[in-house]
Image (cartoon, rainbow, N blue to C red; front, side, top):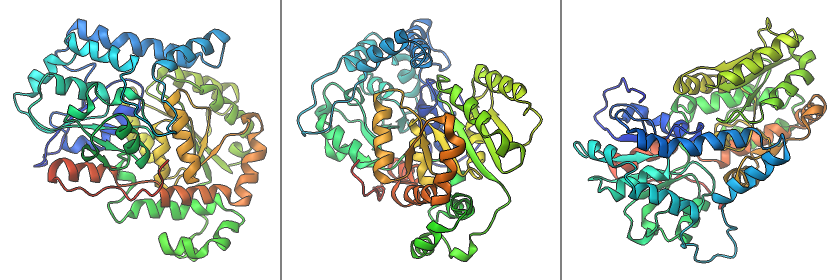
Length: 445
């Protein structure tokens, strides 16, 4: 459990799961309002060995298979089989998709077998609003008779049938979703329209600056110079920039060189791409023209992998390469969020980090890992905030062509303009004040 040191008058239970990063990353902006800190449904204090075992097997195999997906034919076949379990059906043609899925049936059988019962009995002694970032705790809160409102935050741009309960029209679970597509999808699954609110993904408040978006605008102003070194985008879209960010004359060379942040997922997949980026951009790094953040998260194996690559390439002493790592996930989130303030380009698979495009950071998209990430990539491309990665072996060529054209500056502005940014604030308003202010998210996809 991650503790909350603040004493706000509003309180909720924030329930995540310790699986990868997405569900805990979505929970972390709500920490100030969490009673007792963030609760991990698969690792809470007092959890039985039986319940831990119910949770642990799936996570172990997901990480192993995700890691070896692109290394061997066996890995690719195993991943395809696993991914079919959580498959998201095509949205069109619109039709009734309320039939229960195998993934849903499997998890619901675990709930019937006692999953979450002990936790709900404990929380029912002081039943505050129950807010979870994963569908299974929402299942068991409802099944075991939780005595207050139940909210489920969705962490992807589209979701599988398992996110809605077996009898959705009878359910009282309320959904806090990142975009219109998820709302429309849940309606096809049978969830009542009045139980779905478009809030946007809960981005870190320290990167936003309140409803005025002061911090986002400050960081974007600095970023636009590095992303548009030839001034092509600024010249063409001067009025747009001045209407939404700042006068173009205020966009000046900043104190940091072009900065790329490369992030791996919670399973440590795609770490090898970070090594290629380092090697191909080594000359730019050693001359101080480029800075690289390699994100190891809380994985010691990824940290050691990158550390060895730095030593091998004689870059272990340079200040222009930074490995972002902490054994504690929430300390990692804090360090990562701070690094984003001076990040010009975020390179990552389309995980929950897809929604960080709302901070005005262009995203270079590496290959998706899983069905939900295919849809996350589609959403990024539709709003114009992301660009599919080309071959990393030639990043020293295509990246700078993109910069000279102003293409990445355009992606940064598209993310800022089109992706919701105030998700954490909307969630708090809905949970505590019953104030329904949905995100102004104009894109269906």
